[in-house]
Structure formats: structure tokens, C-alpha cells
Amino acid sequence: AQKITQTQPGMFVQEKEAVTLDCTYDTSDQSYGLFWYKQPSSGEMIFLIYQGSYDEQNATEGRYSLNFQKARKSANLVISASQLGDSAMYFCAMPRGGTGRRALTFGSGTRLQVQP
Amino acid sequence: DGGITQSPKYLFRKEGQNVTLSCEQNLNHDAMYWYRQDPGQGLRLIYYSQIVNDFQKGDIAEGYSVSREKKESFPLTVTSAQKNPTAFYLCASRTGSSGNTIYFGEGSWLTVV
Image (cartoon, rainbow over all chains, first blue to last red; front, side, top):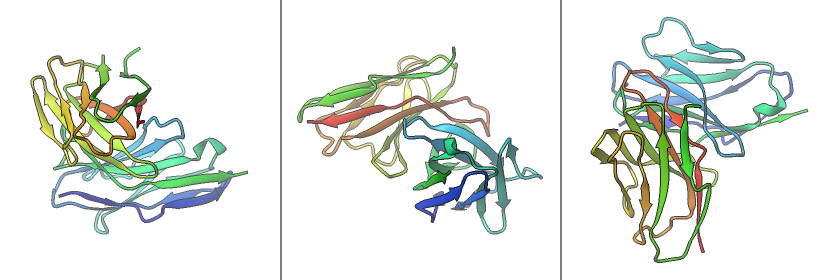
């Protein structure tokens, strides 16, 4: 079964600095995907970035990039130039049983606080 | 606008009562999901449905029931058998293509009083 581990319950970062949120995973699938979501205090889940296991390059979306190290089974989220609005919970997730329409398994999350 | 609509946003339930949380999507997505989130925790899968008239139990299905009579709708009933139902409930949906994003509704807060 898939397992996602986020070892940082909370992180602080100064505004305009970069921050890395850790995510390690365990799967026996050869093909899989990894997702990152942001959850502000309002509760909605906002999709940030996706990485496929066979993608040749690390995924990037604006200020978000994914440091994907397949051999280490890690998919860390890097947020560059942090903004106050980045303060939120961040969740790493992957599909249960490969890709397709499978539900996602989520990590326990990291609470990021951006300080002015 | 296309999206996922959950209602109600806030719901209070007396012990022993069943309540139903609504989830409607107009994204033409095949698969729909229900998650539960406790304060400061990650999301746990309750039920999911990959096609109309079919659904599967997730990790914490006890005390919950669902139906999928229409593609657009996936209501969740929290029954009196659920011993600790106070939580935040999130509905999500996804197309059939691999790698596609799962989109979430805005969630429903359920409190037992």
C-alpha cells in the first residue's frame, strides 16, 4: 500500500525567502504520480503541482517547483520568494494503486508560516 | 462556472441523528471521493466512486453511507453509528485520465451537539 510521510509538522520562513517542504513516499508501483496541495485556513484544498514518476524533468508551476528524487523516493516542494499568503497547510499525496482514477493517499501535512 | 459544490457549509447534529452532506459537480468527472479531516490532521478516505451506480469503501467507511445514482452527485450520509462524527468533510472529483488533478469542494463542517 502507498504511504506518504511528511516529517515537518511546522515550518517558519521569512518573507521573500525560499522554503523546502519534505515528502517521502513508499510504493511498489512502477508508474505513479505525486501531488502537492495547499490548504489555507478557509479549508479548501488548492492543487499546486503534479509530478509523474516517468517525467524527465522536475515539475514547475510559477513559484512552486518539485525536487523529485526517484531513487530516494522523495518529492520535496520548493516555494521560492515566499509571500504572506503562502501561510497554510501543505499536503503531499499520491494515488492509491498507481495512476488513473484512484483516490489519493495524503501525508499528515506541514504547516507553513511566512513571517514579515 | 464549473466546479464542485458542497452543502451545507456548516451543520450541527444531535447525537443519534443521521445527516446527509451534499456534493454536486458539473465538471463531467467520472470519479468522486469523500474525505474526512480532523483538526491538524491529514485527509482520510471514507468512500469513493469511479462510475455511476458503483462505489467502494475507503479506510474509514464505518458509520457512513453513500450513493451514486447520478454522475453529478455523490451524497454522504453520516449515520448515528459513527461514534465521533465531528470533523471537516471534503468531497472531490476527477476525470478518468491518468495524472489528472483531483479537484475539491470547499468542505462541510459537521459538529455534533
